Image (cartoon, rainbow, N blue to C red):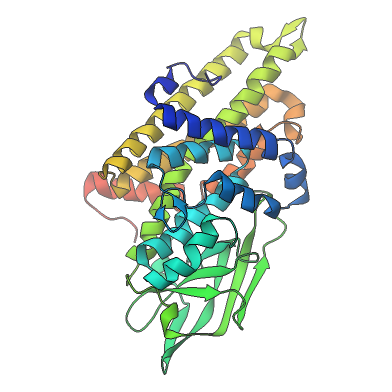
Length: 385
């Protein structure tokens, strides 16, 4: 049983789900946790783990065929929670690769595009990125300025993207651009002349991860580079919802790991002749954190069951993303207080998780955007403008 589990949460999971979770948890325990403080301090993403993530079966794991594992939404969520218990940067890699780039190709690509890219991406032999956000178009992607024009049978792309995960190490970029016929998606091999990716540095958050500025300067693509099965913003939004769903679970994984660090420390640290865990104020903090973690995982599981049943609605993903990110960051901050001054070091996870969650609560829709989505659902009135 997990340390914060006061409700026998595991009794709600099948044997297959528990087995999948344990395999990912063991990977994180062996490969990530002993090294993450150093990677975070060095601001380095461990590219050497990418093939291992492929062998673990978590890259595009919710997709079926083309080398993908075909696992359930709940299993994907459980994996996301375990990966983010290691670090948000590792879960973000799996999300960018699988929920964004691979999902775009799987849902909207041609058969030839799927055959070319999905098998090596699932195996960790190729890396993808997802170019939607721009310097002046974050929460409002409809105002993007990147444009793709026809030139004979070719397409020519010009524009800039910002905060694009993995763009400097990717083999292919899924780039969304305005066209004369609406927003279209394009597969851009990153070796194409005119494509540049520059890592954004320095960062106070997501340090063991890669985010970039991307330049597209007369990037010439053949006609078959376009994703043929979608026109308009519903294309990128369908991918964002996959990523947002994973965050619902992932944020709680970070919260759980921070709680476990604080709980262990409070039992070992003596002050005034007794463990911190023996004081009423400490116990109140621990109880409040455990309750929110349990509730967050229950919400995630409910959404996962709905997703597996094919009945999950987009606004329900906003409920999970908004609530669980908001609660997770408060849990990590509270866990840090139990650690005292030692909590600001990389010997312990809570402040690292809290810093990372500042990014997680911002990407794939800010708190404000998800609040307005839910406000519109409740009132029937859109308040975005």
